[in-house]
Length: 468
Image (cartoon, rainbow, N blue to C red; front, top):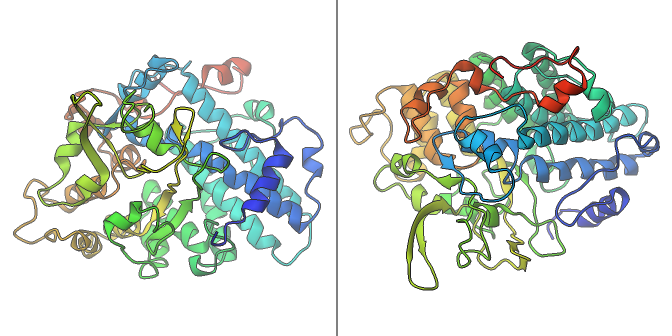
């Protein structure tokens, strides 16, 4: 079972009252929770709850999934469950401040941040040898979560002490710049106090390499390319590009390209992943037991691949045939395919991990930070495509930024990057307008609304984003 400590994970579930699929933390108003952490073992156990929050915050219906892909020209939704208008708010940019998905994301992030802040505050009052490293793991996750939030909402309440979600509602929004300052501070501490990937505490733990990779992305988002380069060069050469198929091979999890990867274990009684079930075609009843039709693939993405690029057919399935022999023309993600997974009701209990940070992303960010195409060309060489600057390179991508935008799209397709990338580079509005969606939006619509419930609870403190 490699080094993943499922016994501790299950202990954490028992302590916290977990559901079958992911950890539901105890009520944030419980006064005994703050007194739980009295030893190194308690801190380690608490960190399992924090890592478990990744299952919710990076799941198939998470903010990174819908903001990163569904809002972009890569994906659309065929989902027919729940409040359809909430899904359409992301897909069609018809977002409203009462979107229940947005409220759920807001609450889930602050619930996870409560646990993180509680662990950090408690650990700082204890003395044991690995204290700083464990705090650093929590700080890495805090930085990751605040990075997601600040990119989606802009100014947000910055909470770094153990406040419950109701108390968080009472905190005024903090400026983006100060939130980014906190993210950088947390990542700097994490990079200084965590081991490298080769010495990680357990498979899937936060490491200094993950902290430096994320720091590079944060600095790019802040527009500081020299500091992004400095952070990313600390990772360059320490990992390698594996064959693209290996990234999605269930027998090649946590491979030499993986920098930070969310750990799942297939099977009904295990912490299984749901990407395959949720991203398969709606009610297909043959590809999977059911299929939720989430993040289905647009023709724009399908057509973005160059002739001979093996990544297309390793990433996307071009339709399926029903039991009655009818051809269904729908394109859907297959990166998280697990055809042998057991079924829990109508949901596959898949074994796929989810890769948050991988080496190809580092190389492509280095080209963005430095302007040097050699890093991007390493990614293209791995799949046998012509290098930028050679005769065989597609002529429509005739500048480094356009070539890089294209390469990030096809290399990282459907991995929750696209809309974040377009927004970071200032290309989101133009690309969306000229896509198959043909949607015209303004700058205000690049942000999610602050949930109406949050504002209603404290209208004198929390203000709404412009345009809502």
